[in-house]
Amino acid sequence: MMRFFKPTVFLLPAFLFLSLFARAQDSVIVSWKTTAEKITEGKYKIIFYGTIKKGWHIYTAPNAEADMSGITTSPEDSSIILKEMQFVTKSIVPQTDVLGVKNLQVASDSIIFFQIAEIPAETGTAFFMQVHYSVADGESFYSESSPPLKIFTGTGPAPAAVSNRILIET
Image (cartoon, rainbow, N blue to C red; front, top):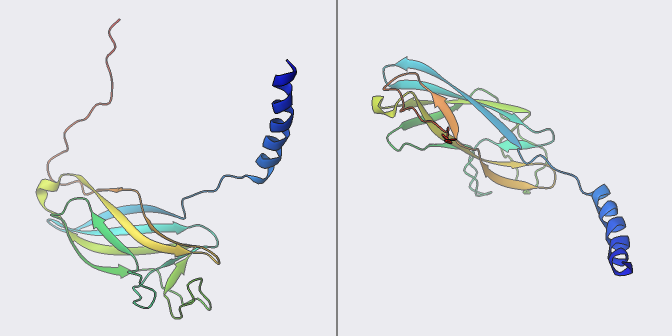
């Protein structure tokens, strides 16, 4: 019985001490939402809304010196054609940057942009896209991709019904 208590007496206080300093971090720096507005048959305005975590900024434009592509998007369906991106949110230029590069265009707090997409009718009523971007705070820099964002167009054939129910016979 004494053997059991010796490691426990050491490990329990160590665990309690470390748990005071460990804290979970929210790994989502930018959370995204989308909407689609029909322009004409097969042509949509896809609007992206990003909410940026406090203290962080997102790089909006390409910069060769920093080897950054800015914000880009990619549909899962290669038949979707994307046109040039248009920013609604005005970019700002920070005084100093974690990369040490001047004149980088960034947005903080939130960002809104849109892209015109040509979507074939056979795509269905919804499709997925991802947003690729770089973010930084005063100390850290990350290149990230959003999870796949489901965009509803409401046109084309309805997707096949999928069921995730399991029948358990009794």
